[in-house]
Image (cartoon, rainbow, N blue to C red; front, side, top):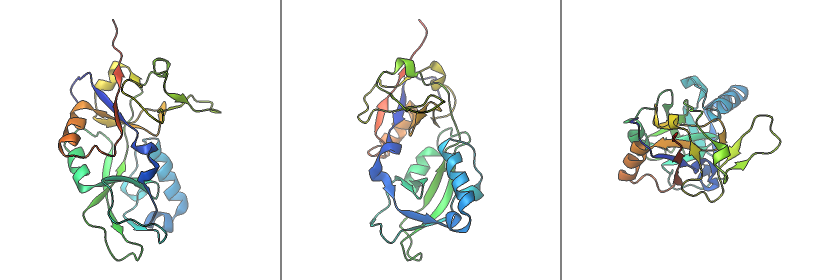
Length: 209
């Protein structure tokens, strides 16, 4: 990623309309292993291919005509081929895109297109909550953790200059349910018309005087 002043944050992880009811092969075969992998991906810890699903199917109670370009299925973030194609053009570091086959509830009828499990594997500890008054502090925690506002605005999140260096997609350990993107990545996603459901707002990069 180039040293740019513009960094963006997505609230997609807070969007409950992106939650879709899916079951998976890994959960069916080994629930404990599946839950461990889920906890790791939520913390952007590196996971191996055998820690994410290879096959997922829609729950019988869930109605879904078409899979969105990004959604949470069975606890895993799933990207369309179109979204994955854009992401691959950038520095993802240890974040991986693992192929996953999506089926209807009969486990036989596939959803159209290819899909990929997004296994976040990069963090940058650059968030400055003390300079981000609209962030909400998560109560009853020994380790300080914050969340985005329910109606986030540009400038809500302050970051140190390190946010402009390194990978183009990452998570921040002090901010829950959010991922961050470089300016160049957001520009490419916009060109591909893939930002509609990402809930993007611009961060403030605080540079020394």
